[in-house]
Length: 574
Image (cartoon, rainbow, N blue to C red):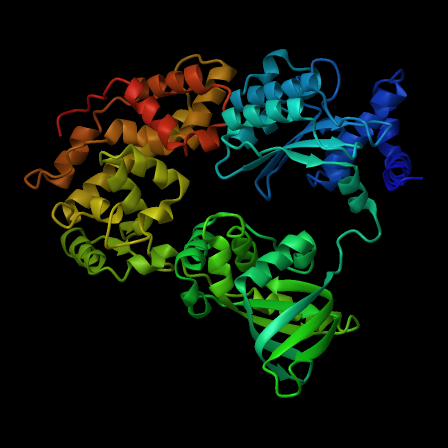
């Protein structure tokens, strides 16, 4: 029997045995449910529990499969980890069958768009309508990661036609062609296999300029080339991080900086990077060139990176780009390999924990070195008795003292500026506004020839007014609005808060030194923000109603188009 057929048999048996409780619940609700529908829903229940982390007590209520499911077979919002899952499930009896056809691909894309538009309740079934509050909370909660997931007992790739529909659909609605997670039969089997969650990988690593320690455990340290690490990750995949706290995080600010260093100045990488630490249950070494050799080939058993996942995954990004392989060959990376017997699990855990216990220093913290920020701090303290914190951990503990933080100040100045691109950056990755204090956009925002304590305080005051308006509007909507309109307003108020603030405040005159802060505040309080807000909501849903709103407001071209389509806001004379 082929491996796929064996895996399918075991997955089917697992669903029948381990989810018999769910089968009883399903048949109690629908006694005439077919075997095919039952298996599909058992598979959804399995995915809800094992992939999304839904508790067994809640699984049944999160299965939405059935007539009028709008292509959505299950939904779950993991509030603790800010992750939301949209499932489509396909239980097929032959692992070689197609996992999804074009019609079902269209249904999934359409249903997901209705979720993002918060209109799925109109035509959805009773199970979907019962999840209205949960779906709305997921879509309207900032920083939620949303995962469309196809779960299938097929072991084939998604056919090209269906794949194109899914990629194009999720690019339009989420701005990400690769948004869909496909869990095929082998992935499902990995979850139930007693060997799932591998203890590590077996591989060879050539360590240059090596040295050793022997007490209390054998340790080897030296350096490897960048291409050695990248190729190791390409060969081993996630098994290389089996005992790590996390895998590669993708294109974060820090990883992007690391990528730039590796590509453009690889000779500096050794000096800038902390290196990579492996632990392994067994390490056999072969000296290259005799006892006096400086290089050693290590054969590593049950090996795993416990610190350096970001370094390794970032180096892999260079493999297939122009100039990347050459840079990787020149790059040197520090490496430690620690041999810890499997019997000493506690020490192995401690090595992992302590290698990942460190206080991070963000880009924001380096801004405090700018003398202009120090000058603004002194001026705000002298002129307004305001505590301006420009370093992490400096927030005022005294609630009676007015306080402004660097992030709030940056956002406020951007909102009152003229660059919609900076407004989007403030929502997308605010640290990009601070990355280089000697050039734009930082020098445009904190323009030494314009910005002073008074103008900064005015900008903060104006932005706080807008933020308070958005909070109030969400809590007590004006007029007799429908639930659909309220959901739309909430989505824009939460995800589009920066764009709305920019729409209202861009170009605001905060520079009049003869106008006091009190005069400015009194004039600004007369502003009516309801009409501009409703215009923005209408524009967003007229043109981008099917898009998930979180990535929409991080898309510069779309945000620019939205602002250009709206009439200017006439604020009171300031």
